[in-house]
Image (tube, rainbow, N blue to C red):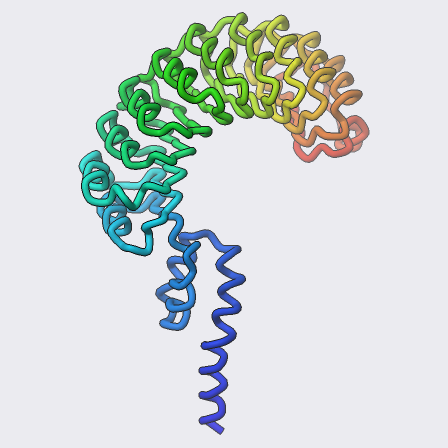
Length: 351
C-alpha cells in the first residue's frame, strides 16, 4: 500500500505539479514566483523551465540591490530580460551601473523598462552608463532624484531612441533643456510625468505641447509658476486621457476652456486651481464627457451649477468626484448623489 502511495505521489509531482504551476505562473508576480523556486526541487525544475520567468528582475526595496543586480545579470537565464525594477532599492550606486555596462552589456540589449525610482545615489554618470546598453528601452522612471541634471537626460535621448513613457517626477535639477531634448527626440511619447520639476518654465512646456501630440498622460502636479498661455496649449493634445494640474495657481477659466477641447480626457485633477469657477467646470463637463475622475478640491469659486452640468454630461461615466473644500457646493445624501451620478463610487465633500 505504501508503495502505491509513493508511486501516486511521484506521478502527481511529475505530471500534476507542472500543469498547476503552468497556470500559477501566469497569475503571480514575478518576484513571488522566484520565491517559489525554493519550495521544492519539483517546483524549481518546473518553474525554471519557463522562459517568461526570467524576463523580469524585481529588486524593489531590497537591500544589497546593486550586487544582486550584477549577479542576476551574469546568469544566462536572464539574457533576454525586459524589465528591471529597482524602485527604492538599497545599496545601489553608480559603480554598480558601470559594472553592468562593462560586464553585462549584452544581457540588456532587449531591456524595455527600467525603474530607478528613489535611487538617490544615481546621478548623470550612472544614467549614461546604464542607458548606453539599453537601446530598446521604452519605459524609464527616475522619480525623486535630485542629482540628475539635463546632462543625464541628454544621455538618455542619445542612447535610447524609443522611450514612450518617462517619469521625471521630483527631479528638481532638470531645466527646460531636458524638455527640449524630449520634444526633439520623442515626438511619439505617450506618458510624461514632470511633477515638482520646479525649474521648468513656459518655454520648455510649450515645446513639449507643440511637438508631442501623442501624449495620453501628462502630469504637471505642483508646477505653480506656469502661465495660462501654456495651459491653453494643452488643447493641442487630442489623445490626452490623464491630466494632473494640481496647484496650477495661474490656470483661469480661459485655460480651462482650451483644456475642455481634449475630448478624450478620462482623469482630470484641478485640485487647488483657485482661479477656476463654474464657467470653467461647465466647459469641462460639456467637452469631456468621458470623465471618470475629477477633482475640484479646494476651489471655492464653484457651486452646485457645475455639479448639475457634470450630472447632465458625465453621469454615465463619472465614478470619482472630489469637491472637498468647495464651499459653494452643498452637502448631499448618498441617495441624492446617486441620482445625479449613478456610477459614483467615491465622492468627497467638505465637512
